[in-house]
Amino acid sequence: MKLVIVTAVEEFQKDVLTLFKKANIENFSSSDIDGHKNGTSILMASSWFAGAKAGNESRLFFSFTEDEHIEALFDLIIAYNLNLETNNPIKAVVVPIEKSI
Image 1 (tube, rainbow, N blue to C red):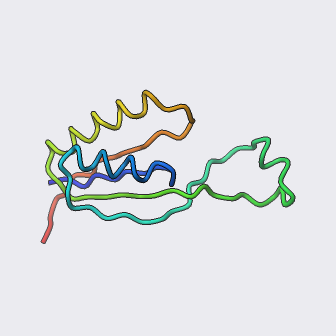
Image 2: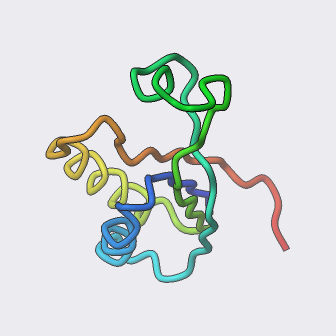
C-alpha cells in the first residue's frame, strides 16, 4: 500500500474524479487548496495591489491504495496532460507507507 497525492486546478476536479474511477481508486479524500507560483506575470504587475499575490483555486486528492491502481492512475494522468491547452498540468506523487493501522 502507498499514498498517492494528486493536485489540480479547480477546473479539473471532475476530470480527476473520472481518472480515479478509471484507475479503480474508489476510496480517497480531497480538499480545497490555494496553488501559488512564484514569479511575476502581466496579471500580477497590472493588479491594483501589485504587491499582493493571489493563489489559484486548486484541489488536493489523496488515497491509500495498491500499486496497480497507482500505475493505472499515472498512465491516465500522463495521457490527460498530453492534451492540455493550459500550463496547469495535473500533478501526482507517490509516498511509500512504512506502517499503518
